[in-house]
Image 1 (cartoon, rainbow, N blue to C red):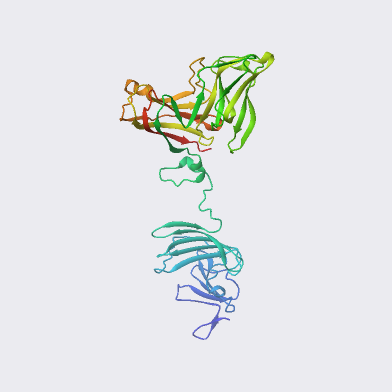
Image 2 (cartoon, rainbow, N blue to C red):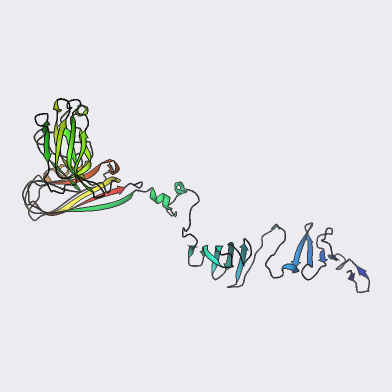
Amino acid sequence: MPIVNLDGTTNDDFRIGKKGPRIRQGEATPTSGVDGDLYLQHGTAETARLWHRRNGVWRQLADQAYADGVTMYETDGSLTSSRVITGAQGKNFSIITYDTDPSSYNRGQFILLNSLVGINLTHAAGDGLGGSTGIKRLLLTPTVISFTDTIDSKGVIYSHDYSANYTARSLIDKEYVDTLDQYAVVGYSLAGVGSVDDIYVAGHYDASAAHHQFWWGDATATHGTAGNMQGAHAFFVASGAGDSGSVLTVTGTSINDAGIRITSDSEILVADASTLSTDDYVETTKRWLGQITYTISGPGGGTVTGNYGFAAYETFGDRDFTVKDFKADGYGGATTTDVDFQLIHHSSAGWTYHATAFQPGGTVLASAAADVSTDGDFVDGGYFHYERVGLSTAISGSSGDGIVIRYTAAAADSLRFANVQLGYLMAATT
C-alpha cells in the first residue's frame, strides 16, 4: 500500500522537510537507503516491523511479533558506544534463559539486578515441569555476599590450584589446608611418686639392668610379670655380633591395634645374630602382655649377648609429627637433688648396651637436669617449672618411631604432682 500525500498523490516514500529523513514503506526487508531513513515493513499484526538506517546498516526498531518482551532481537548486534540502563528504585532488571521453555526446562539461568536487593546470579536445575529441584546462587547485597548451593551442597570450588599466589587475605581451599601441619598440645600428669625410680608417661621402658648371654647352655630369658597389661614391644640391644645363623625369638601372648589378644604367639626378633653390631637396637612389630620368653636357636645352639625388655611409646596413632616444645611444672614433695625430666625420641638410634647398668632409651631431645645444671634441686613444698621451645625433631610415627617422657626421682616422695606438656606439629599427610 503506497503512502498518500496531502495533495492526494501516492508514493512509496516521502521526505520530512528538504533535508530531513525519508519515510519509506514496502513488504520486503529494506536493502537500500541513506542514514536516517525510516522504513515501514508491511505485514500482519504479528509480523509488521519498523526499521531505521544508521551507519549504513538497517536496524530493526520494533517487532510486533515479540511485543511481550520475551525475545528482544532476532540477530546479534554490536554495541558501538557506552549505554546505561537506569531502573527505578526497587524495580527488577532481569535476564532469564532456559534450555527448553519455562514450562519444561531442565536448566535455567537467571540474572536479576535491583537497587534495593542487590545482584542475583542463579543457575536452577529444573524438574521438566516448570519447577526447580535446586539452585546455585551468588547473591551480592548491600550487607552480605553469599553463595547458596542446594543442588549438590559443594559450595564454591576453585577450578585450579592458586595456593602459590595466596596472600594474607586469600580465601583458602581444602586441598591447601590438607597440606598444612597442624599444631597441637598434649598433656600428661604425674602425682604422688613415692619410690626412687624412673617413672614414665607417654609410654614406658621396662628392662633388666644386666645383660643376658644366650647360648645352648642358657638359651632362654624371661621378662615381665604374668597377667600384667604391658602392651609393649619386646626389644634387644646387642653387645656385638652373635654366631652366624643364630635366631632370637620372642614368645608369649600378643595384642594388636584392633584389641585382639593372641595366646601362644611368637615373632622372630633377630633372624641372624651375626649381622648385629654393638648398640644395635631391634624390636618386635607385635606388642606383648604379661611375661614373655626370649629363646636363642641355631647351629650348635646359637649365641648372642645383649640387653632386653619392653618398650611402649607415643605415636599418636602411628602418625608422623614434629616435636616443637616441652614443658614440665608441678610441686615438690621432698628436698632432693638429681631429679630430671627427659623427652626421649624413641627410635633405633641412640641406644647404648651395658653389661650391668643398662638404661633404656634412645636420643634425649630435652633434659631438665642437663639444662639447669646445679639449679635443678627439688624443695619440699616448692614449685618447679622447666620449659624448652624451638625443638624441631621429626618423629616417624608411621615407621615405628615415637616419644617417651621419663621422670627420674632421686628420693622417695620427691614429687607431689607434675603436669607435663608436649607441643607438636601433626604432619598433614597422616
